[in-house]
Length: 62
Image (cartoon, rainbow, N blue to C red; front, side):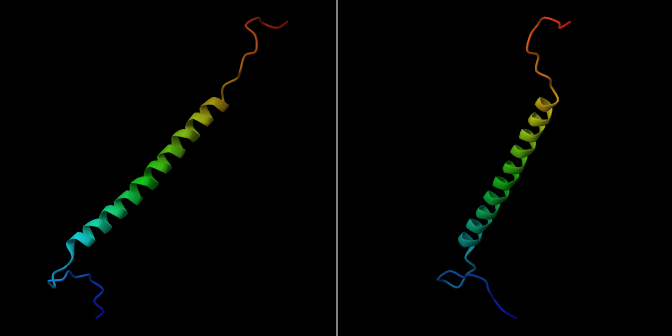
């Protein structure tokens, strides 16, 4: 069995390393989730504004 674990100078599992790796993964996940949510909100507003007609004058045309 291959042991790819990282150990500190005392032979203990390097928890600081793995905690930092977990923070990196969490930051990447949140960044992707926020980017996706922002794109969804932007698409919603684009869709809402595309369905609206722009009136050029307040006078009815005959």
